[in-house]
Length: 408
Image (cartoon, rainbow, N blue to C red; front, side, top):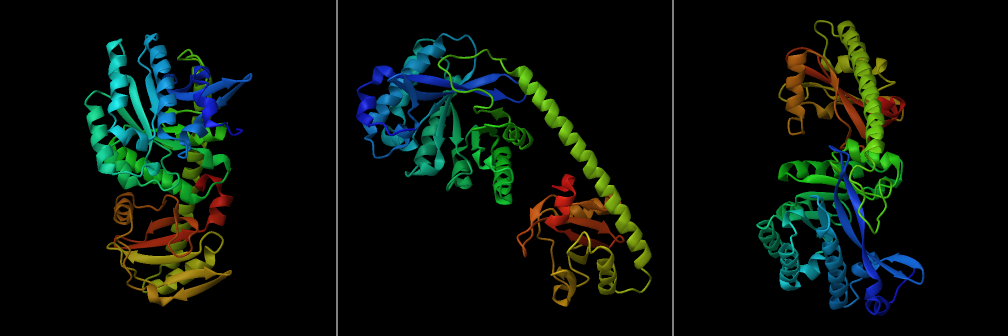
């Protein structure tokens, strides 16, 4: 938006008003809350006050006065509703801590006296812009919680978000900006960051809310990656009024059905590829694993017959110690690497769990997607039990996964 002079905003506060952006739930496909946003209507045009509130060069008292003006109007509007929708209040944590959250709490107490329910309030802050003592902020939020007020951390995973600090704040809701998915194929590191956030959310009992959803495939990604709540112009643009709670239930239900059908089809394809791959390896092992054969010779023979689908092969025992070297494909040619003999991989995540799976199931399977330590490439590993003590590992390159879409 075009730059607005802060004084133009402060001298026209009567034209500043709250807008409300609906937040929807996956489980009920209904509005579960609204984020309060600031807008100013001047010269027949309505403009966002987001840049004004984020500009730290503007005096604190200006931003606080405008914020409080919007909050007062919004809270009065919520008194007229008969539901229990959550009310998301954006707050700059640095401004909040000027008086340790007391003035905001006084406003909320005054609202409660009029009949408001503090358990509807969600204080939303951005952790990575907070420059103060995180322990002091944690104390303030702990105090807020005694009144039923909830905490949300915004822009998780962006900029320099620190998951340890976020964990200390113990938020009820983690808001993830899905805008990096404007690229149809974002970096694997973005997916990895979201995976780490989902693990943190599970550990601290927080709900994930995806925001800035603008197109269908972002909505699908949010649904698939642990999103319980959704927000963005694709679902509903900010409005001056509240909307009917089930306004887009039909749309969400229809799109969820499409997402589910797609995932079921992909899972079926994944299962079929996995079964076929297991049979292929089983036949090769049955053919090549003759009595007395050395493991180094076995993986060399296998490499010649698996050259179209894998780039690294090795064999470990049940404790993770390599019983062979590596055979690695470089520039289209296989190279034997004896230096990997007796290296131990039991420290890797899921390694021992996968060994147990092979012992129990007596069959091979694909790992999840991960980045290879040596190449940095996104790969999968196929693990196969040769016998009760020895296990074959085949690393599949990204090019092969790309050819078999269900593996991505």
